[in-house]
Image (cartoon, rainbow, N blue to C red; front, side, top):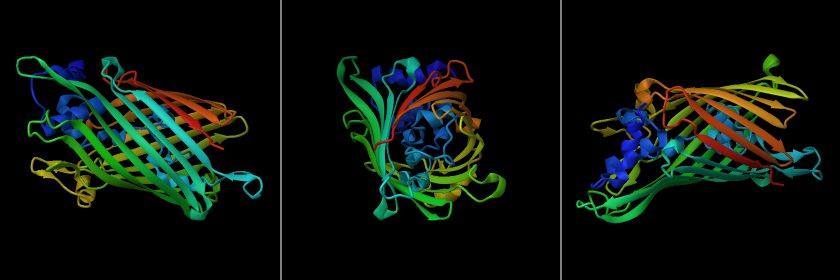
Length: 381
């Protein structure tokens, strides 16, 4: 991909023009996904708020963006909320005097498209706790995507002022065990997209969109399956299901996605823990020149779009102290043609776990090249 594809969008800040709602949508997709202008609409299926598709934590990112069948910490709120159901007590779980409810906090940060110095950044946080009376774990989370500061100019070139663009979401998640080795979970989410003030858009309407969505996940971790017991896990998560993102009198579909995943623990003993995982993500958005299909129709018509994202990754822990991770992400050309290797590492000390990931793109000079994520996980006691 040529750097000019993204630079042309970043230079929009100084152009002597006003912004339409569609231009704002395409600009947002370009900045968040880092793909060429030619692939903008196809990559997200014309969907709004693509920041909801970004892997929030450095651990999963370092494994090629997998996590649907792992979901073994509080970051399950993104990958598969059913994973929350497997977290209940810590300590001596059979002794009410010595056990305590599961609690975790997670924080993540990443500078987005760092090579362009575009002032973009992504931040995420979640906190959760097992609640005995609800027989499950409840979590709150937020995601914030800063799209930077933009300069508005008049036709004569004089500066008219500056404005900030951002998008965010807040969510409430719950997961529980419904049968032996089987968990389910859901997330409810409020979404807001602040692309531009009313004085910027050609229609004179504020470029602010609002919507809500839900996720629904299931996770199976068999403990009595012969050779596969306590090694295999299978998961599915239907994400971002909800009404279209509404910008006053117009709207765009959410990036509804079905994630399917499998994970397998190859080795686990007192010193070594080696895990392999694979995820497939299918975007269920159907859009053409006449418009887009609403939910639930798009859950069926979205399958008419060929192709899906594929993520493969592995994680190795030594003495549960130091971790190394490797992964690969790929997607078809019609979805944006992103292909890259992911590398990651982690270290655990007492109640803290610090994770790091790095993207090495296959294509030279790709905007996502050298993107780094940093995450902190705390076992809150």
